[in-house]
Image (cartoon, rainbow, N blue to C red; front, side, top):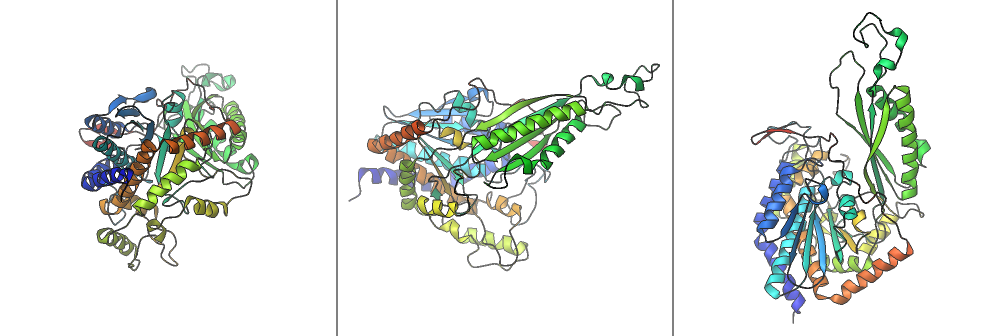
Amino acid sequence: MASLTDEVKQTARKWIDDHLEQLVQWHTHIWELAEPAWREYKSQRWYVETLRGEGFDVEDGSAGMPTAFCAIWSNGDGPTLLTYAEYDAVPGNNQAASTAEEPRQGLSRFAPGHTDPHSALGISTLAGLLATKHAMEQHGVTGTLKYTGEPAEKMHGSKVVHGLRGYYDDADAIVSFHPFYMLPLCNTARWDTHCGAYFSKVYTFTCDRPETWQMSSTDPNSPIPASHSAARAPGANVALMQMYTASRTMLDSMLPATGGWSFSDAILTDGQATADNLPQRVARIQFSWRTPDIEMAEHICAVLDRNAEAAAMMAHCESDDRWVARSRPGRANHVLADALYANLEQVGAPVYGPEAVDVARGIQESLGHESSDRPFLRQTEQLISPQQAERKLREHMPAWQRNWTSDDYVEMSHYAPLVRFYVARPALEPVAGAGPYPAWVMNALGGIPATIAPTIVTTGKTIAGTFLDLFTSPELLTAAKQEFDSRVAAEPIPALLPADFEAPIDLPWPDYSQTGESRYW
């Protein structure tokens, strides 16, 4: 005989099945918008309007971030459970939802596209949220659902700000989802080894007094201090290049070549954009680094700060820096990981039907490969327990290393018990001797309805089941909180940025111009 909880879960799962066509249409809309970090205006507006239409009380532009939101719906007294949407895309990764490499119509191939895809992250969690709400209404389950819109995940942008402003303080538990991006973390939950620290800064070099560079070289009869015959100040571009080359050549001196740390950069386009006979006035470069722990991240920061000071001095510039993010490593919660994985087992791994298989075969053929009977990566249709995934993950890591890779959910794990889980996104089985598939393949599969629908279904049902367990089993939530409290007491890690830290939304991040419904990058 089925328990009441089983009946409530069935109601939630049926809601997802009944609304799958609509959910996939919603996903296509967000996927096609493909707006980059801090510029997700239309995507955020769609979420705000949709959630209000579903009865949520929505704060538009939460924590001073125009493309963030916070939505709340309550069905009476009870715990507050939180999950969230992401919706930022990645510049330079425009790909159509097709079986061949081609950009979305009317856009440069260098326009943004969804790579992870965050479009599926948001719609999958939204499916779980709305299914839970429906089951709560149908069966009288009490409690509060909280749903935050988290822009600029690719820069660890919003969660640190939401956290500092108290948006997670009232959460009793948090469910964090991401489409899988590396094995063995596919159709499972993280156990002990969570994501590590992430630091990101923008260094700005400004040449505001070029006339003081070399006074004797200036023609005293010229009304223009930087005349064509005068020696010019090196300028901001020179400072940027000195900063870039020095930092890149010093990687071996920053940290040992172990521990899976990484270092990346982006040059922000700002200021002078023509090759005029003037010193370049302003130049900006962003560095981001991912490390297993905070001490390693701080050491890299010290090297970069020194390099910036030296580069500015060489190029006759002033320099300043601005934090983009400064995230702490994640906290595990075994109680929630076990509870969520039990629901994932009840739902089962994604299953790719005949239409999805035909799409995958079409991609194989477009690349000159022979199409296969089972084209999808076998792990995408299998479950792996959190404990087994942990054992496999640790095989690739030094014994001292406690954290691996990077994602900004880690900040949320310092405010409430959190479970981080992964459901397969469509990925193809490698062809023997052919090497990896090009990046456009996974990007395209993430936008094709037949191939992305299984991710949405599995994720939504798993979140709904986990939420309903937590609403109806007070002892489960108590155990999760006790574990959280004990981990915090054993290793307190205060926030790394001040409480009044503001998101760097005003920096010149990649953006687009728009005329009517047309966008130009």
